[in-house]
Length: 331
Image (tube, rainbow, N blue to C red):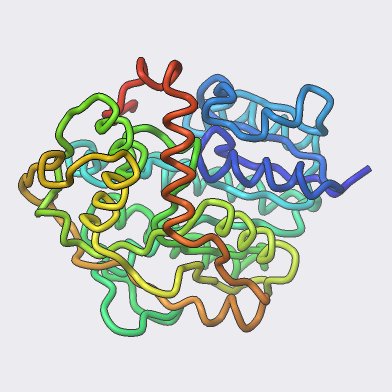
């Protein structure tokens, strides 16, 4: 019997990849849960391991079905719990801020309150966001103050503060991670990199908010999953770890590379639109701590990762062509 790990939000891009990594490594039994039915292999790479893999899925919305989720966890008794479940889109959080706080803060508080009373939980990994810092300028370490610029970021900052109280009062086995802009094959089609590839296939123009000058720190999904596993295995309870690449890049440069991969002319493929409300100028954070303490470092080069996304979209086009490349908010 392997170590038992519960991945809440396993339908998410990051959650699904961590499940895949655990199954690939071996030695783990995994329970996945999300509020929606389990997705197909188009979005869940772990499906490649087949029905015999030590994985099972439970559909449970922690907003409205927390009792069912806790019952499944009590039955499974995981030593490690990783929580990816969140409303994570930025722009729509201005329209429905209550939905973001309900999921990212209120429901989280009830989940953690319950888990703090379960003796089987030895490590709980909270997935935070560098957006809690606002614009990241200079050397942004784990000690930087939180200055959120959007309702989404504020809801994540509130969750971070709440969890800190459970660590302090109840010695809750909290570990936290903030990683930069994740990408890779199997990502949701409304994210900028797969959406660019899809729009290029459809010969539609890609809208660049603010001309695409915002600097993002794109990091491949497998590098993030490896970092999260390293935190679970070797991280110090109570610590926060950053996972990030060596440098940031402007969004428009990433789109330009995707155009080159598709054999399309950049100038004919994009249009500039207004910037999103609360858009921070840069998300570049320092990951020295994770590299020094955990021996982690990113290994997938951005150019290789973008080529992987291009191949995935091309190879999966019969399925992806009917997918909606726009985000549709679900309360």
